[in-house]
Each structure stands twice: as C-alpha cells, then as structure tokens.
Length: 204
Image 1 (spheres, rainbow, N blue to C red):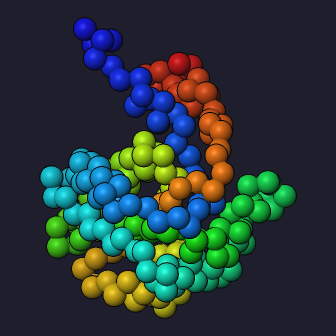
Image 2: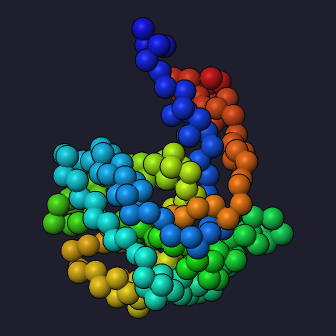
C-alpha cells in the first residue's frame, strides 16, 4: 500500500533541483509566485510560530540594489575565501556575484520575525521554508538558488534597501526565474560516503 501511494515525481524534482545562476529576464506570473510562497508557508516551524516573512522584489531598482549588496560582500571578503579560483564553478559564481543576481526577475527575500520566534529557533523554521520554495520553483519549471551573500553587505545596506524594521532579520535571498539554459542533474557524493550506521565511522 505504501509503495502504491508513493509519488515518484517528487523524488524526480528533488534529484534535479540545483542552483541556477543564469536566469532569463522574462517575468514570472504572479500566480506562480503566490504558489511558491504558499509552499514556503507549509514548511514546519518551531512551535508552529511561522516566523517567516517574505519580501518579493520585482522592482528593477531594488533588484539592482540587492545585486550591489552582493557585489560589495563578494569584493569585501567572500571572494578571498575561495580556495581554488581555477575551479570552473568559480567563474559562474563570480559573474553572479558581480551583477548577475540583479538579472533575476524575482528575488524573494526570506526574513525571520523576531517578534514571532527567537533567533536560537529561527533557523529550524526559515530554512525549511527556503527549501520548500526552491523545490516549488523547480516543480514549476523555474530556476532558483539560495544565497546569504547580499545580506552581508557593509553598513546594513541590505536591510536599508528593503526598508526592513529592526524586528525582521534577513536570512536568505532566493532569486527566481526561468532558466537561461537547462542544467543537468547535480553531482552528489554517494550516501555510502556520507553516512555512518549507529556510530560515526561504521559503514552504512
């Protein structure tokens, strides 16, 4: 009975979902954005506090400001943390951080409401919501990724760009749009490499 109820399409979405840094500027219909947001609100949250707050950025000027925040953080400290600049993925990340983010037609900023939940519990609510958003976007044929890079722009520039009150803490940016080009399945290490049985080091 349990096998009959399984939905293989869910696993197909999970296994194909990956970070899309190159997105088409074509607008995303409002009904799809709302469907994605609804998926976010169906994530689990600590004590059912539902502390997520969404800022959906479509305005070109605000998206540019978010992209400027990413560039400031990238040039200020994040680029220096790259271990291997010859890695092919580095060039894609560099293009995205230096302005590519602003090309996304939609940027969902996921904030935590400190009036609804403590910061100690916030992550267990916010990041499941972010994952639901990423999977929902993939299910609708949209590309997405999650990044905290713009949030670390100096002098609180990110919160200022969105006019966030002190009670809302930005925790993730999720650019969303139609993929500029189709990507294959992501490469992943095997579960045997990553998993122990009962105690760490005992092979699965």
